[in-house]
Length: 113
Image 1 (tube, helix red, strand yellow):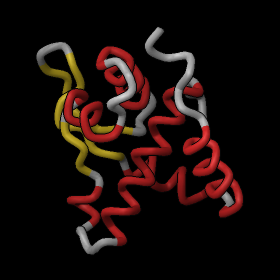
Image 2 (cartoon, helix red, strand yellow; image 1 turned 135 degrees about the vertical axis):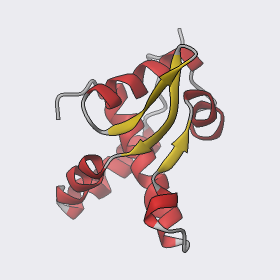
Image 3 (cartoon, helix red, strand yellow; image 1 turned 90 degrees about the vertical axis):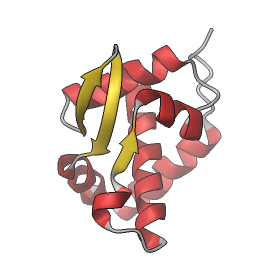
Image 4 (cartoon, one colour; image 1 turned 60 degrees about the vertical axis):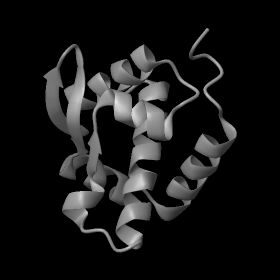
């Protein structure tokens, strides 16, 4: 992946949320929907600044990990792409486990200063 570390962390958390939704009976088409930058920030990244979350989502969108529109100066109605899901599924299980552990332990200390 050619993403910044922060964008990767956002991708991992979005993918984890996708898996949680799908494992709780939501369809794939509903599980991939995340809404706007503002909705994503409020629900998944309240510790981060809105502008940072929007920037990371744009980076993911620009690299085909998210699909969505830009409106009112922010990412709007974004969805996790099939490419993102396939990329994450292709990672070895132990890599996913270590990524999940990394994301849980790493609390974005560089962002928001």
